[in-house]
Each structure stands twice: as C-alpha cells, then as structure tokens.
Image (cartoon, rainbow, N blue to C red; front, side):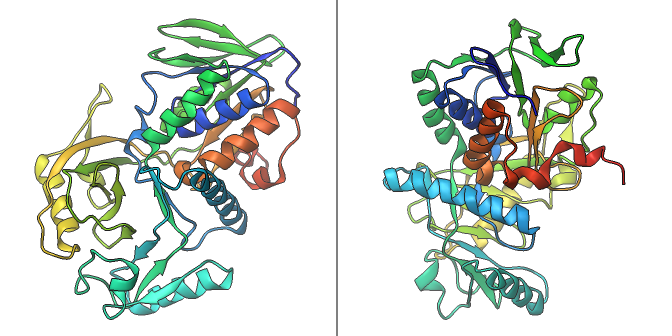
Length: 376
C-alpha cells in the first residue's frame, strides 16, 4: 500500500456519511482534503436511510466486530451530548412472520457471542418499548437494549461543520466525478462534469450505489446488488415509540421533530426507475406502508405521510462491505457498504488512517476489494 506523501492532498468523492466521516478524519490527521459531491450533502442514500445502529442477527465474525466498533464510536459521540435529538440509544425490537423457532435461533445466536438480546412478549412489552401495541407483536419477540438510531442528515451537518473548521474544502453540485490516473497507473486526481479537475495524491470513492460505476473505467469490477428503496417520513405524532422496530411488514425509527421514518423491502418491485434515473412509486404504496406502521402502534392513531424519498440502497454483490485501496490503481481507495450508518464513524477513522500512513488496518482485512479479483 502507498503512503500519502507530506503536503499531498486527498479528494473524497461522495457527500454521504462515509465520505464526510472519512474527510473529517483525514483533516484531523493534517491532510489537505477536498470533498466533492454530485449534488448537495446527504442528497443520496444517506438522506433516505433508516440508519438503525445494530449488529443483530447472523453475519461473519469480522463484520460483527466492525459493526460493534462502529456502535462504540457512536456511543462516544452520544456521551458528549446525550441531549442531541438525532442520535439515541433506546434499543431495538424485532419480530418475524417466521416460525417461533427461527426467532429463538436468532436470539440464541446473538447470545452466543455476547450481544445483548432478550426475549419479550405482550406481558412485558410495556417495560421495554412503550408505544407498541402488545397484540401486534410476534411471540416471541427480541429486544436488543444496546441498539440505537441516528438521523444521518443531522450527523452529516455536524461533521461537515468540523470539516470546514479544519480547513477542508467542500465542492457541492460538482456533477459526475471520474478518477484520473497517470501513466504510472497511480491516481492523480478527479475530473468532474461541472466543477473541473482536481489533483490529489489519493482519492476515496465513497458515493454509495454509484461507487461500482465510478471505478469501472479503471478496469476494476465490484459486483453491485443495490436495490431500489424508499424511506417515508411521517407527520409529527404525540407519542412516538423510542425504540427501532423491525416487523414483518414495516421497519421504523423515531426521527427529529416527533416523526417516524419508515421503510421495508416488500415494495421494491413496485418502484419504477426511469431512464433519467428518477424513481417513482404510486402514493397508494406509501399509504399502505404507513398503514402497516399504524397497525403496530398502541392507541390506534392513524399516521400520515409527510414526504418520501426513493433511490438505490448501496449493497455490494456479496453483501459484505468493500473497504480499502485498489490493487490495480495505487492511491485510489473505495468505501461501499450496506451498513453505512452503523459503520460510518469507524470506517471513516480506519480508512483515513490507511490513506495517511499506508498501513493496512487488520479490521478491514476481510473487506478488501481484491477479493473479487483474487484467483479462486
């Protein structure tokens, strides 16, 4: 891996939470950083993320460890100001349409590696997640008290303010960005369709579901399984539940302003993507998702949709994160992951460390891009 030479600059492509987080960590380390984004900050996947902070269910040991470190960084941030309304740790409640045995197996797996996991039912629900209808939950359900949520637009605003204070340069509305390489195949900068060219000693491509397309001209292929998705924000409600809820037909979390953020995957095939890249969905589907949320809340209040956003949800082809330098293009790094919210702070920290020092961090060892080109 290459070491960033003193005085060299770094360009970060992507105004989502991982791009902004990495840019801040680079600036803290003394680099000259330019953050380039196609539109404005948080205009892509970060602006429509449920952003549930968790490591629930089953995944590889390396992925679980990285996610737990990500949650740890959020807890440090939370401890600095527990009164922030965009970062909370009030737990998560999960139930499934599967047979009870499947839920029990999930609970046993979580307990096997020390994840805080508790079985709940209608009789003790009020002590864990008030605001949920006891008759709506599955039997059994799982409550994970260590989980939380973050509203990424507010986190991005918080981080970008520090970025500017550290001397970072933000270029919004730059249009499509392409990585430039020299005759030695090493990265030399970035060209944008609206803001011109920028030179740099290192480049990070962290533009969510567009990441694979940006690096494809470099001769590097990363499988992309990013599906169409939607996030709905409700009108304010007086008694919103505090925990994140994951149910068979709707996932929801609180949102600043006494609102709820809603998503799921059952309607993915009902989202239409035009040739212009714009996505559309019938309002009746939005209303149906809101009805699903209303049905699990205690009190019988009917929620109302305030707004919704559509687009691609970034997911690499094998479901695992992709972090690190491209072996084919020294100085060009990538960050492409489904769990952008949970991993944002830790990924930014570790990627910035690799860019600045040239030392590969062992926690990213399982997630290198060369796994897709490595023989066998």
